[in-house]
Every structure is written in structure tokens, then in C-alpha cells.
Amino acid sequence: MSEEKKSKGQYSEVVEYLSDKLVSELPEQAQVLEIDGDNCSLLEAFQQIVGKGYLSAPVYTIDHKTKKKHYCGFLDTRNLVAWVVFAYDEKNITPSLQEIVHHGIKRVDVAIDGVTVNYLARSHPLKPVAADDKILHAMSVLSARGCHRVPVLDADGNIKKLITQYSMIEYLYKHRASYSHVFAKTIGSLDLGKSPVIAVQNSVLTIEAFQQMERNNLSGIAVLNDDGQIIGATSGADLKLFLQFSVRASLDLTIMQFLNMIRQESLRATVPVLVCEETSTLGAVIAKLAATREHRIFVIDTSKSFKPIKVISLSDILAAIVAEDPQK
Image (tube, rainbow, N blue to C red; front, side, top):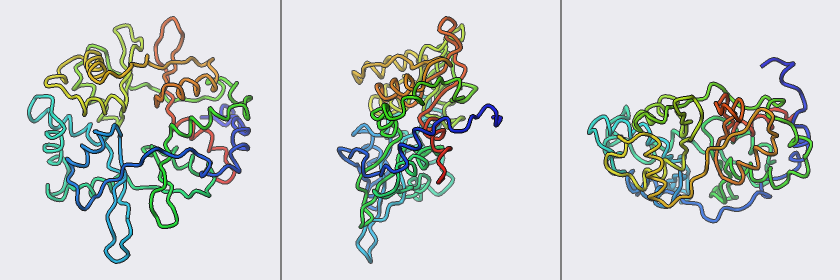
């Protein structure tokens, strides 16, 4: 991006507002699920996470000397995307969660008995913040690729609450009146989003969509019709639903049939794919993301052609704001 295109001070009002706001002001989470890495098998750990409808959970061990918790990292269900593909290739069926874990550990390049909860959690290390840290600092940590949540630790090193990318977006939307000028700017003028858009045709088999997600290390991709128009998208929420309600042979359905099946099975109210245009305002984009709890919105060229040209993720928005933080 050229210096001329990246206008300085685009988010200055937001940065100024957040400059003295503390992490302690962010809302508390109702409950934080923690996994005992010493006494929990991989299957039991994933069953806990999936059963409670989460995408990940922090894993801890107990220090025998201090008797205090030591956090290894997060156990993340996104790791299971690659395992689903591997298990399917081995047995040519839609695997259950038990089969996914059973076959998936063979894919890891260590001895099978070494693929433990603690081992996998270390690949997603915790990046904690303190309650008296600035919100801009927490936002900077969350804007990094692959970081979807950060823990807030108390004085004893225990997790007090988790801050997610979505909670940051929700906070930005709640206080929008304090930086209305920024929210009135268009996506085009802010140059938000990434291209090209990773997508699959609606006629491809679900297993092919999973393979595409694995190759690109994504939890969600766009779904296009034969004319290249965006008609849907997968998400991390769909991955959770698949793990909860996997149906034999469902990976042999087309991706749209698959999404309809798991959403109906779970009684989840489906959200139409989120789209905007280059002329849409940042405020409108954040309002949609805050209302739907989706993690990405697609930029289409025109409302008539409906072809996606970019995708804006929550981390894209957070990264753009913290890039102007003078303390970063």
C-alpha cells in the first residue's frame, strides 16, 4: 500500500478515545472453560469444548512446587479441520469427533502417545494482558493473525476473563458516538480488507471445502454460485455445529447442502452472508458485525453483480486502528 493511499490519522479519533481506557472496563465473560491438561484426554478435552459451544479453551497444568496453575496455551477446535480431512481420507466417511481425534493424532509428526492436550495447546500460546493495561494494547495483541482471544490474569496468575476480537468490536460499536467522524468514513477511503477472496463453488463437495480451508489455514470461506456471486459463507460457528451434529456421509454433500443440514440440525438461525460495498461506511460494517457476531464481511463490487472483491475480518479492523497508536 502506498503512503499516499494510506492516509495518516484515519482513525485518530478512535485512538485518542481509547488511549486512556483500561482493559478492566471491558465486560466480564459469563464463564471461562479451562481444561486440565494433566488429567484430560484429547477426546475428553474436545468434547468439553464442543459440548459447551466454544471454539477453544485455555489449558493448564499445576506446578507441584507452588501449587499454582501454569497455562500451556489454548486447545483450539480449528486444529480439527486438518484432522477431519485426514480422517475422511483414511476411511472415506464423515468421521465422528471420536474418529477425528483417533485418526488425527496420527497426522502429527510426533509419537502418538506424545500428542497430548498440553502438546497441542502449546501451538496456541497465551498472550495475557493485565486489567490495568490500555485497551489499545489488548487490541494490538488481538489483531495478530491467529490470535482470537487473550486472557486477563489476576495477581495470582489465574485467568480472570477472556477478551475476544468480537468483544472489541462490540465495545467500538457501543461507544461509536465518541468517534462518529471515523465511523462515517467509507471502506474504500480507509482501504480496509484483503484480496483475493478465498472461495469455493456451491456445487463442490464439503470435503473439498474443508480441504480448501486447511490449505489456507482458515475457519471460513466464501461460497459462490456459477456466476461468481457470493451466496453464502462458512464460519467457525459452522465448524462447531459440524463437530456437534456430524452426520454420516455429510462430507459428500455439496457445501450448501451441508451448511443447511447442520444449521437445521442445531436449530441455529441462519445469518445471510454479510456483504458491503466500497461506499459503505465503517460504522455500517461494524454495526453488522456487532449485530450478527460474525467474524468477517465480504466487500462486493456492486449490489447488482454481487461478486466479492475483498474480505474484511475483525482482525483487519483492529489492526488498522492500532497501526496509528503512537505507543505501539
